[in-house]
Amino acid sequence: MPGLVSVKTPPDAPSLHISVPEILPGSSGRPEQPPPPRTPTPKKPPSSSPSRSKPSPARSTKKPPPDSPNPNPLLSDPSLDNPDLGPFLLKLARDTIASGEGHIKALDYAIRASNSFERVAIEKGEEPSLDLVMSLHVLGAIYCSLGRFEEAVPVLERAIKVPDFGKGMDHALAGFSGYMQLGDTYSMLGQVDKSIECYEKGLQIQIESLGEIDPRVGETCRYLAEAHVQAMNFDKAEDLCKKTLEIHRAHSEPASIEEAADRRLMALICEAKGDYESALEHLVLASMAMIASEQDNEVAAIDVSIGNIYMSLCRFDEAVFSYQKALTVFKSSKGDNHPSVASVFVRLADLYHRTGKLRESKSYCENALRIYAKPVPGTTTEEIAGGLTEISAIFESVDEPEEALKLLLKAMKLLEDKPGQQSTIAGIEARMGVMFYMVGRYEEARNSFESAVTKLRTSGERKSAFFGVVLNQMGLACVQLFKIDEACELFEEARAILEQECGPCHQDTIGVYSNLAATYDAMGRVEDAIEILEYVLKLREEKLGIANPDFEDEKSRLAELLKEAGKARNKKAKSLESLIDPNSRRTKKESTKKWGFRI
Image 1 (cartoon, rainbow, N blue to C red):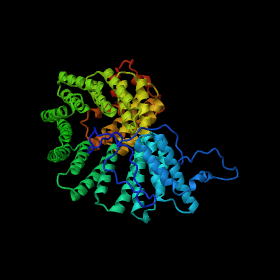
Image 2 (cartoon, rainbow, N blue to C red):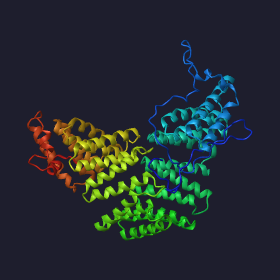
Image 3 (cartoon, rainbow, N blue to C red):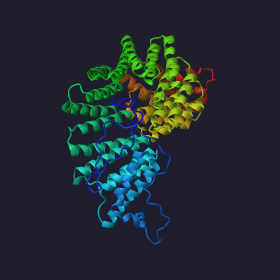
Image 4 (cartoon, rainbow, N blue to C red):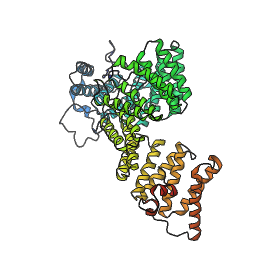
């Protein structure tokens, strides 16, 4: 999945090439469906090419007669009538890819092959066969390898419409493969919701064909679980991962490598949900399995994860021990300048920063940056960008926002041309927006937030809690720029999302309530502001308690608004300048606190 490294596949594994399924011998071209994916495959570059409703037919300048409505372009090329042409062209496409002659030539062969299969079916008056499905899968894979994902989508959508699941296993597996390939393509376009929908349909087909406890079903469940983790649907991911564990227990030896991979994913899910003890338990069991299999590098990677859990539990000495164990293994097996070594340096820098040892923290940051500045061959840009992003967080926390911004900008440039990284780039832009805001560069902050919001809307994350938080931050930047109407719209959208995702009692939701009340007051909508503050106070009194220091602040704000409304309901509200102008008599911090604009 985009932005999610499979814990089963080593991060330094070579990229997979296009694999074109073979044609069964003696079957006159009937395709053999590929097995379900064992792990998520690396994605390929995105495309800005326009979509097409179907693959282009063979080149022809002949125009259809004007009195022929919706002409079929396949009928314009009589050379495609030969039933042996499709299998021949498909084999040429496969051989061209295998020989490395170039994907453009293979693309032409694949387009002509699919047109031939469809033309023959039309001439015979039959339904399209699985030969056509095979050629469309190959064509879609070639488009993806060229980064032309938008053109691959209609091809693969056509492919999933051909199989008839009632005609046996071949059709079912063809449908499964098509849905999974289409899901990967949507994922690379950043359309996470559509991607997950395709994976779920593929899983359902597979279960109906193979049964619920088939090992291949387990692999697909794990694939789908990773997609849900990427979309931050942790409850669904946990259910799928538990099912995967059950299947692997039924078919594998105790403490197998497959079970270890499942436990690492489960640990990731538990950590995301704040269940650190369970995450630690899964990681220890996974480590024992890898030790038994003599997978030293995988054991070291698990040690890093264990160190992260110890640090979350404030067990810093144990975290240092885990990190140092991993560091020793990575240096001996991969070299001192490998990105895995740099990643451990970053974790140690974060740990020493948290414990107040700033000199050691800075030293580890410098060591990591030295490795990222001269990466060894095979280092991916995603690894470098991730490391730079983590180091920037340390610089930000030690009050060096300008240095942090430089690192984030460098990370964003590394990822901007990479496929499936829209959400990651959006997260970087959101962080840049926060730092621009903190140093008073409000216009740049608003622009960063706006770019992040646009990417998150496109990628299908417009209903996530993170999206709601980014909307709130953008609203605050708009307030500082006196764009009060725009800020109000952003706060209202953020409120709706956070109420749905986090509930009304969550601190992020209450912060948006307070910002919205202050905005309503600045707009002269005193009644709306009073209504929100009364609701917030009621929540605190009945559910959250009144010990929170914000309670008295909100209570005094409400009393002031009620006093004003009691005197004259149409009284002009305080101007926005008097609420947040940093040059007013109150300091900016005091004004923000009094009127409830919360960062």
